[in-house]
Length: 146
Image (tube, rainbow, N blue to C red):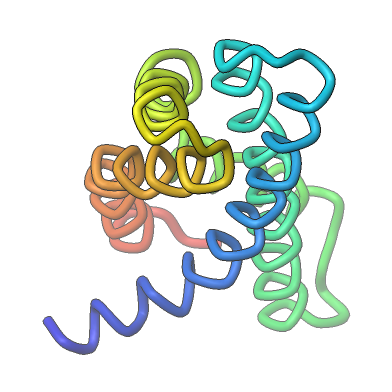
């Protein structure tokens, strides 16, 4: 299990850290313009998603490019997209539309601090996000070949 935890941390940790940082900055900017926690609750997670999935897509592309080398073909782009949808799709639907905005709103309101609220809301939302994501990732590795 220790090996798996290390694998998951290396897979998701850098993208998560960078995207939460981007989300906090976005939340601060949105609040500065709108003075509205609801706007922060919806816009900062979407900005976080853009950063997170850009990094994850690049990592998946790099991994597949390294694996296939000169045999990398256009079909591999579709496999990258397939892999990302399988791994993140089930968890992302509820996370982006309900869970993450809810927790960010709760924490930005309760703490009266946008940066801490976005951070706390994102970290709590990650619990419900990564449980199905990791299951999907492990099933994908077991049943799908690149």
